Length: 40
Image (cartoon, rainbow, N blue to C red; front, side):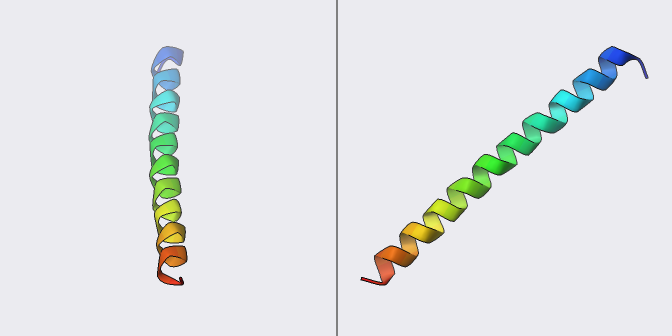
């Protein structure tokens, strides 16, 4: 595997990681909002 392929793989991995992180953040925000909403 050459350097360019390796770099592309690493970037693809980080893109996936960032997408996942965004989804998790969104999910956590929704859960927090929901708990606050329900506790009133």
